[in-house]
Amino acid sequence: DTEVTQTPKHLVMGMTNKKSLKCEQHMGHRAMYWYKQKAKKPPELMFVYSYEKLSINESVPSRFSPECPNSSLLNLHLHALQPEDSALYLCASSQGTVSPLHFGNGTRLTVT
Amino acid sequence: GIQVEQSPPDLILQEGANSTLRCNFSDSVNNLQWFHQNPWGQLINLFYIPSGTKQNGRLSATTVATERYSLLYISSSQTTDSGVYFCAPRGSGTYKYIFGTGTRLKVLA
Figure 1 (tube, each protein chain N blue to C red):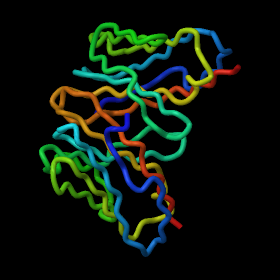
Figure 2: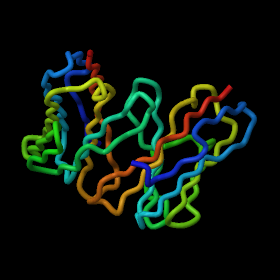
Figure 3: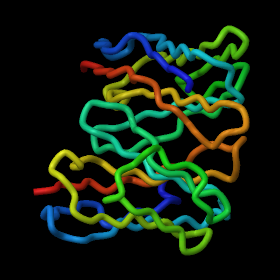
Figure 4: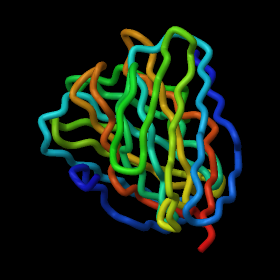
């Protein structure tokens, strides 16, 4: 699946940095998701936006701040991360609750 | 929330062999997807299969929602089938897809 685009592909940041991950889709999907995947583990849901409104926050620490500026874009703002936040961050979209997920290729984040 | 378990956790096959991967889930679901995650981390849609049986080339999947399981069949396996296979069911009326524990497959030439 390449219809969901994530940038950057790789990111290295220090614990005092502020950075953002970006996700874009042009399939007209109305739900967008952030998942976090640690090595050798399944993806874990972080946030879900439905019609540009945050509908699910899986008790994610406030150092992760999602934003959905419009129906095609999803950002994840990062601030004061810890080394244990190093992971693959995956964005996905779906038309609605009865539609399949489409994933981007992910951003591999390393926190030093 | 839904608990999702996959078996076996690890599988090594010789090229050309067939295999069956299983996904059990603890609650009723209204849809389910199977994904293949390649060594580069890309999650590739294999099937969207809330119920019944679907086939795509050497792969097929069956979901029996009333009995809370889904199966993924891989026939004539190839080295490019290596990677991790995840099932991800979603409950009724929710946007939450929950990923299973995964089956790590290695196909040897």
